[in-house]
Structure formats: structure tokens, C-alpha cells
Length: 493
Image 1 (cartoon, rainbow, N blue to C red):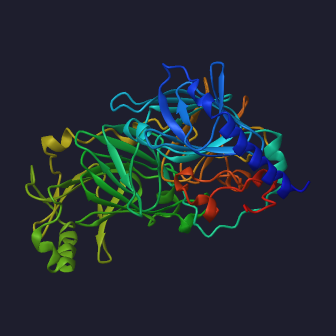
Image 2: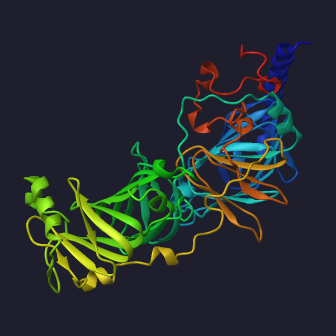
């Protein structure tokens, strides 16, 4: 019997079995809460609650406490009441231990005993980022609102790895350039394509990310060149460019933009290896450094109404005036405070550069007023400075990666969008997973995977985003064929 014939026969038997045992769906304990339904099932998939076992087909309800099994060559797509969708691959054992999507009481605890899944999470994790947990035999996965996969690999992955070729993709893999090291209050981000996201400790940062802190909030950002930035309350900050590679020297650069608010910074390896490669643009001037610690605070709008008229000549005259600055106790009006806490800081505009003295506070007023040196900070600014970034402890393993063989038995966790997941072992570090990253965990090891998501995981026929499943998917080929477990030998007929 050919693979195509076997697949066709399996589909006929499964369809008859589902019709013949539909009454089993009524044998659910009365007290179990219905938390979702099956959108699709192919092959043999069952849900067990206590002693009751029922086959899963389209529309089958899923209850809290269900243990779900998918057979060899079988898979299922589940939809939960909060909008979460999940694809369970073949040979998977999965349990819904707890699920509550009621506002203010969000909680989800699920368990993966065997096999793997890919999920797109919904309201539970978006409303309460600490509420969604997936327990496995080797680690706990925390889901912070994302498209992710988790797979417990054994001999199956080793076999698939031998049959997998290096992937060629036209989609550019986004580099993680930094992570959120600490948050007090609220930190929100917006990606280059305008996608909003809430950022928590460990969340990945990318080039072109626009970051905003809320009122009475601050955040500490850690970048991969060992530089750090504290964002003060009600600050808008753009990671315009950031690239660091060990030994990259002149290629390494960081270019940020302070749109409003304030920051405290300590520069890292980029400014040491490429002194002109680290800069922060403000509405008043571009600030550069020479391996140093500095603060920038915009007062008011940071730029006046007349700046747009004759901007070049006015700003140039401001910087020229820095050579012989005037003194004042408390500047008034819009402008930029620059505090050179340590090392060298300079301001530049129109190819003119003026160096600012160490341990001095400068006030660069907008329009035509002379800059002020030795200015006292207003009380409201002093109260809002936030912590020194160099004194904020950065959790271990933020940027470290290790080579991991795709054939190694253990857990692989990967993220496919700008969301965020964590992998934690008892008495071990918490590793954070961002877009195009992967973490490996076994009983003896946990590590960020060098090179990102392994091809054996990314190319798995069942590793598809369940959020893209529609009723017409079978016609469009969005889900694996019935014989995907046999290396997709036959097309769906």
C-alpha cells in the first residue's frame, strides 16, 4: 500500500470514527469549564478528562483539565476563549491545567509532556504578561504575548536534522541589539512597521524601535556593547541605528534620538573602538562622547518656535558661544541640559564641534540665548533623574549564545514576532527569547542558541502559525497535508 493510499484510508477511518463516537463529547464532568474548541484535527487526536476519552474533531469543546494527545502523523489546531490559537504537532501530549480569561483574573497554566506546539497568544498574556505559563519536563516557559514554538526533541529531531538542508529565506532576520534590564512603571515600544508592544524586563530591542516611558516611570536599557541607558519618565527615545560586532571597530556604531524627556547613559565598547560612532541626536544639537557617562534632559519642548527659521545659523551660533559661556543659577524656558558626569562630551551641529567640561552642567537654550555652564537643575528634574544605569544590575545571559546541535535531545523554544518569552529552570538563570531567537534546555544545560532558530525547528512541516488558519486553509495549503509526517510525499486530494 502506497503512502498516498495509506493516508487516504486513514482519513476515511478517522472521519467514520468521529461520527461514530460523537456522543462521547457529552461525557465531560459537569463542573469542568469549557475554555476553547478545536478548529481542526487530522488523524487521531483525543482529549481525556478523568476516565473519559473523546476524539477531537472540528468544533469539539476543550475543557479545563483536558489532557490532549495527537497520534503519529496527526495534528490539531485549538482555539481558546481569549483568542489564543495553538497547533499541536504529531506525537504530542499536552494538558490544559488552568485557564481563566476573566478581566483582572487572567491565568493560564498548560503543560507539555511530549512533542511540540506553536502558539499565538491572546488576551490573557496581553492583559497580564506574567499570567501565561507553559510547563515542560525540563523548564518553565513564560509567555509575554507572542508567536512562539516549543518542542521537546528526541530521536525524531535527530532524524529530521539529517534530512534538513540549510534554509534560504528572503526575510531579513532582525538582530537583537539590546534588552530591557529594568522597568519601574510602564514602558511601551513601537516597531519599525508601527506594531505596538508592551516591554518588560528581558524584552528584546531592535534597530528602529521607538520607546516611550509613562508618567512616574523609568526604564534601564542594556545594549550588546555593554552600554546602558536610563530613560526618565515621559521620555520618547528612538534606537535609530545600533550595530556591534566584536572586532568590528569602525563598523560599530550607535545613533540614538532623544525626542523628548531625558536620559542617563554610560557608553560602552562602541564609543571605545569607534570614538565618532556613538551619538545622540536631540532637537537642539547632536551629542557625542568619548567613552563616558552623561545625562541629557529636555526642558519643555527643547526647541523654540523660531528654530525652524534659519535653524543652521542659530544653532551654530549657540555652539560657538559655548567657547565663552555665561553663568546663571536657574535657566528658564525650553532647552537642553547636558551633564558630563565623567569623561568627554561634545555638542555638534553643521560640522562644528564644541567639547563640554567634565563634571559640569550645561544648559543649551533654544534660539539665540547664550549657553549656560554651571547651571543648577530645577527640583522637578532632580526628582525625575532616575537610577544611574551603570549601577543597575543586568541579569546574566542577556546576550550570550552557545552552539547547540539540532539533534541534541531537549527543549527548543523559539519566537517569531516582536513578542517575548522566557525559559527558566529551578535554581537556574532565566533566559529571554526575542524574535528569531531560540533557547535550548535539557536537564543539565540551558543556553541561548547561536545562530537563532535551528532549521530543523523552523522547517518542521507542523511549525506553522495557527493564527493564519482559516476555514479555506485546506484548499490553500496553509496546513500540512495528511501525510506531512511521511515527509509530505503526497498532496491533499
